[in-house]
Length: 399
Image: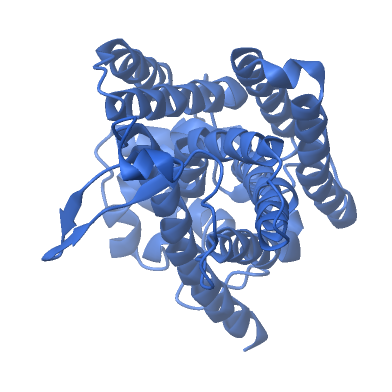
């Protein structure tokens, strides 16, 4: 019952995480589009004299809108200001809670891969938590350094550091956990940008206005820089959120490089849209992003590792025995594996029909990607993988 309650809680937290993420990323996309779509008012117009640097007219949902942006701030602030911060905080808090519920509470099965490193639960969690904290401090110091004044340089260095993080985590943790913790590190950077830089800077600007003083433009400049960084992080982090469904990526021998290429593709595609909002048509970025995804698709194509020769006849009963010993702990109506309360992906392998029906899935996960059993917790052998491969190759007969 306790495990079931944890799973229900994880489901609800995941739902909240997705909803909050949609709100946060949606507002990021909208405001970047808005910034790039504003038209400067005529120099002698009332808007220009008020300090308006850009405006636009839009129609949506049967109404007309006229957003305006001030170069620094209006002469007088209205009593009511809308702030955009809770989307970010809710996304990070719910994502971290989900990380704890799904990964940290089941670290031995979800994070540790004994074939890489025999970590204790506390060591695995410390690596995951440390990657999130250290990533923020390194990124923040980089942005505050003299290099922070050069956006292109910062972009290259941050990309290199995140690639290094992915490489290191895939050496220490199971592939799925490594990917998720790279995403958690990026998400921490994004939320910390809002919490430590963007919102405090905006509060100082508002406080200065209320006190009749001129706001410090550096607060706006720094906040804008971090906001743009967050915008470019969005597509990579969204991919990482869904990556646990695609074992071909995180189970690849060079999973860190696969992740780096996909993230680079996401950044290029995001840059295309940002430039497109400005009226340019930089198709090269879109093509380059698509080319990287194509490279990943080819590179991660199924490739069966060399398996030992099978001794003895390959019968269905032999396959069923292997599945019963190595897979049924999770893939049954009542799983007995610690932390698993429902069969993953709804796959049940307790009956002959279930095994035959899911033969290709078993082959893909056990023989091709070798991601199952998770961390090889049930100690399946290469010879047993070879038996399954031979059975599926022969047409997965049920006798």
